[in-house]
Figure 1 (tube, rainbow, N blue to C red):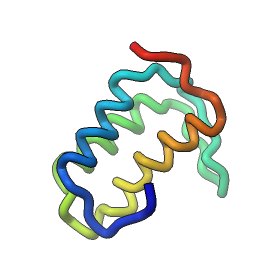
Figure 2 (cartoon, helix red, strand yellow):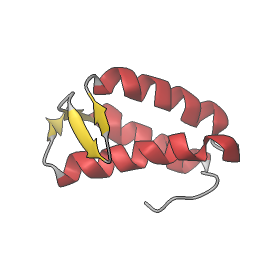
Figure 3 (spheres, rainbow, N blue to C red):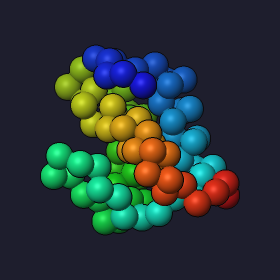
Figure 4 (cartoon, helix red, strand yellow):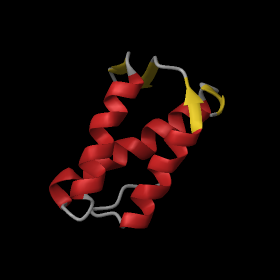
Length: 83
């Protein structure tokens, strides 16, 4: 997904549902100096931001990061399977 200044509740729930139904490795290098060691903890925080701030432009970068993580997990073949 491309960056957007705001996201709909449906977009947020869809990306969160994807993470909740797929098992992924907990360590991922996003490039650009971004490395996540405990993905599940990072996702918990991003889910909270996304659910409560999806219409707030100030948090659009953090919300977009959810989509970037999903895409990078798929690109790097770090999705283990469905839960």
